[in-house]
Every structure is written in structure tokens, then in C-alpha cells.
Image (cartoon, rainbow, N blue to C red; front, side, top):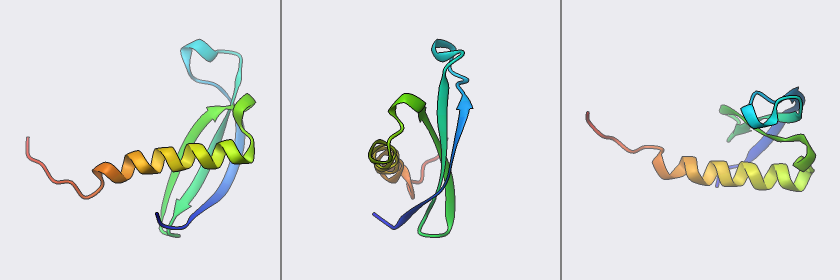
Length: 72
């Protein structure tokens, strides 16, 4: 997996229907210093270790489809 750098962590009100009134964190990170991505997760689960774990999970899923070609 390429190098990942967390650029920013911002607390926001959750846009999820089941979490109205609760806080989430929005994490902006870069992959390989080139591409930037954003993930969100509940603020109550947002320790540094949990954020890193969440990003690794999201990136592993993304890598499964990156570079795939298909026609419709």
C-alpha cells in the first residue's frame, strides 16, 4: 500500500439519517502525495488508531477496483 498522509481532521454534524444531531469527523488524506480523498466516521470512534484503521479498510476496498476496465 502506498504512503498515506492525513492532511486534516474536522468535526462536523453527521449527515446520516440515523445520526442526526450527532458529530462525525471528516478526514482528508492523500495517497502517495498525489490523490486526495475524504472519509467520515462517528466522532465517538475517532481515535488516531481507529482513523488509521478506517482509512486502511477504505483503501483496501478502493484498490480492488482501481484500474479495472469494463464496458456498458
